[in-house]
Image 1 (cartoon, rainbow, N blue to C red):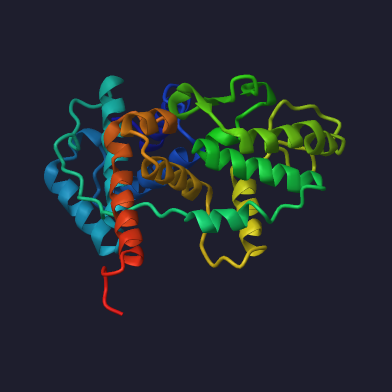
Image 2: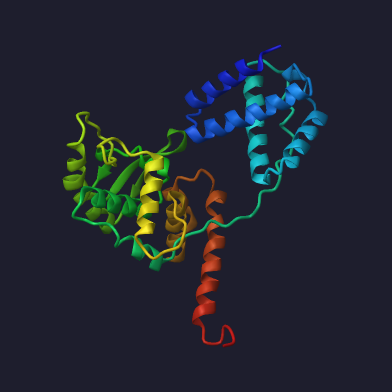
Length: 303
């Protein structure tokens, strides 16, 4: 019989080292395993080998009683399926009782995006005479120009930017690498920031860093820092929308498809492993087209 916590520690090391899991994944999986271990203790199941389908049904019933969403339950099941797969590989258990447990159907939520008019307001709020204004403009332009994840953005180094061919080298999930192109607006904003604002920020610290985006103290910008910057930019406009880095990623994909880009190209640019992940944006574009039609066609709706 193997101690629960020993298994958890080994599994977390496996996720961090072999799978290169993000800090968010590690946090959620830790919480999910603790929820599962609490259930095992309450049910007096002392051996991970002794879990059966009846136990799993009771566990799922408890999750729904706590009013957890289907998406959260699905994540917990995915975590436990991976956990038992790892235990099987290490020969701690004989079988994976979660292998044939179906995941609950997730709610079909379409990704939200910004309209062009909303984006234009954001592009005009930064004070380009200040280092932070130059940084914020470069950040906004790059996120929208490339559709990269916020976790990918904070890893970018100055040397990853190639102005000659207009690409940025990105390290994505699972250390998968790709080159993403960017246009002239992003190039101009990045050059201004790198040649001026970034140097001013570097003067505020004795340590040297090759990270592209820096905070007010000259240190590498974090995920949370980027979210804070975007929220502050919205506050300076008359917009009432909620904005977060992934919304710019949704906006990038939606605008690309609306302009005629094919799905495979958008998949490559976003770094999606499966085309099905990218296909959700086709539903967004259909809604967008209907919105444009209903507001533009003279006889689309009665006055």
